[in-house]
Image (tube, rainbow, N blue to C red; front, side, top):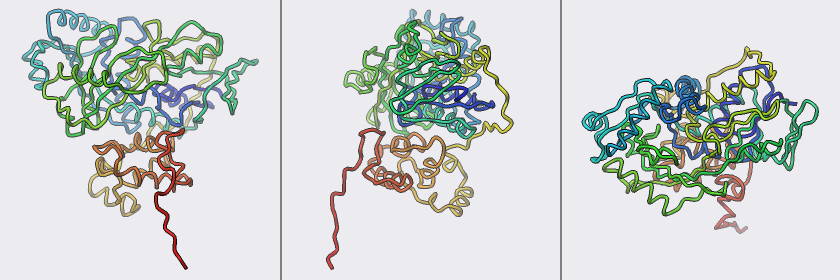
Length: 480
């Protein structure tokens, strides 16, 4: 029996696992997908929000500000890129300026530091490419950017290195309470736990119903994005928002930590919690809206588009509660969920302690994880030394992102271990450049087949039926 079982391996579940791994506890994470961060976390804006948007007094407000303060230290420990680039919410009229003033005052009440209202001249000085129609902005210097999937992968990997167990392809079908244990079952396996954390994203309401909790509902909100080439990352220096509406923070324009330019997301409530398809209408809306905020967006440098689903609850706030002893919901974690994730874990830990979970510090706990990109960031002299020890680091597999075979092998052998092309992509950035894997995918497929000891035909893009190869196109035979 495990002390704690976490359902869901997105950024919230991963942060929860890492925090619990610091104690003398047996912890297991159950994830229905074939990898970590395959839900909302995978298709997230990657913005660490300052905390001025959420209504004062809500969990969103409290945990956003706290999580934003925690993020630099956590990213440093986990070897994850974090850039404190600051954010700007721009306005185009007097009505917008009034909204920005309300956000300014709300942010002050929430405890956000350094907020300022900028006039047009100050705005242009800070961000020269902002729309020529913009007349004012709210400046939030504590805003930042991270890679959301890299953060989740690193947190889960650090948790696993400290003793947490991860079970992939484990879709929870039922939960029953028997004596002092929760019995959690998939179609193939059952685990027991004294405490359960429900961090199942868009399916959190379904999981809650398994223990008789019908107090909330979750629906999916589609968000479509457009990603531009890494040469476009300097189009803007800061994360650019428009004034928010009830549907969210609008279409943002932001550099990423890897110097791409990100546009999006749209905001569309949908019924299908599995539909991650992009639409012509949605992507057109992204481009048109982004061009209203920022001048000179090089739309011809688009390299890909994608869609994510946000888990939107029916309460207007994060749903963090305990409907029955030993079971905790971390549900409806929409924006600013990424920013708040370390604080959500901290908050949930307090709830577990109050319900009787014994938390004895683990003397062997190591919070440090080596960066997945340590080779790329090394000096020329350091790279030469690494190549001397392992020649695989001298062979470039992905030319667009300059990713070596050594980095791919390191990813395959490091917790949580990837099993497909997309898993390699999220850990190394191989396939994320201009060609989107057009040239490097065959080589990565061969490396995966060799390392996983499976036929090339069994290597997938993202698990399931996403087969890359069905067989050889040519067979060469030698005659005696």
